[in-house]
Length: 267
Ligand SMILES: NC(=O)C1=CN([C@@H]2O[C@H](COP(=O)(O)OP(=O)(O)OC[C@H]3O[C@@H](n4cnc5c(N)ncnc54)[C@H](O)[C@@H]3O)[C@@H](O)[C@H]2O)C=CC1
Ligand SMILES: O=C([O-])CC(=O)C(=O)O
Image 1 (cartoon, rainbow, N blue to C red):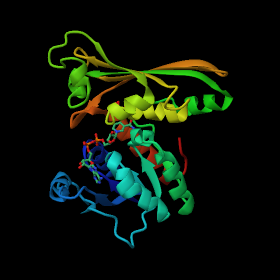
Image 2 (tube, rainbow, N blue to C red; image 1 turned 30 degrees about the vertical axis):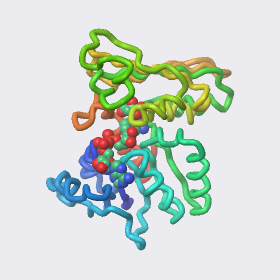
Image 3 (cartoon, helix red, strand yellow; image 1 turned 60 degrees about the horizontal axis):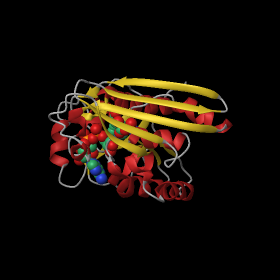
């Protein structure tokens, strides 16, 4: 059995825990919540048969097989870097955080010192295997468009780009590099950052973000060209009820990755 610690227990975390209840090879022993939210998280987990222990930091003597981050950018600094130093392998879902200058290098250095590894999860997007394989032969361009329901852009700079409550047609709210997208839209730019890290980097990956009042889906579309040829992928993700910014596929991506660590065959 694989012993897991989960950082964050919001829309993704709860969805993952629900699915993991069915897998006897995976056990989440600890959930690390942010300071002051422990009671709320325990309440969220009240209906679970064997709820994990809710803490605000990993105990000094805990040695989980894996730590999975489902929390947000701050949690990378707070929990992932120290865990790597302690030799704990980490899976990261808030990949957009890695657009902060120097963070990739710090994660690499911490993992090397701890003799362990970091895995960046594909989350809401697919085709990362093909894109990073294509990179080996050389990529010329990667263009990404993220289209979400207007409400998914609430509390983002999208509110300054248009009136999200009254637009009647799909409206471009951002065009630029993936680096700029990740800076301005940290909670919505994980896909752009993931594509960049697998492909041609944050400065050369071109991003368009669209608020669509007629859509109920988070649509991720990208086109890649290079020595391998070309491919494009369109993924129409259903948002999670608990958080419309997040696609349900992200939950399944975490469950798949954890299963791949525990099961005899990984795919
Ligand atoms: N790679 C991808 O494709 C995707 C990545 N994400 C990222 O996943 C993260 C979580 O998403 P959701 O579950 O939808 O968000 P959410 O807001 O529903 O839940 C996040 C939970 O983490 C907790 N949290 C925040 N900072 C923390 C910290 N430092 N330590 C412990 N707990 C902390 C919050 O209190 C909250 O309960 C977000 O950062 C989001 O950007 C989301 C969707 C797709
Ligand atoms: O669709 C999602 O779940 C999240 C998303 O767009 C992103 O963070 O890039």
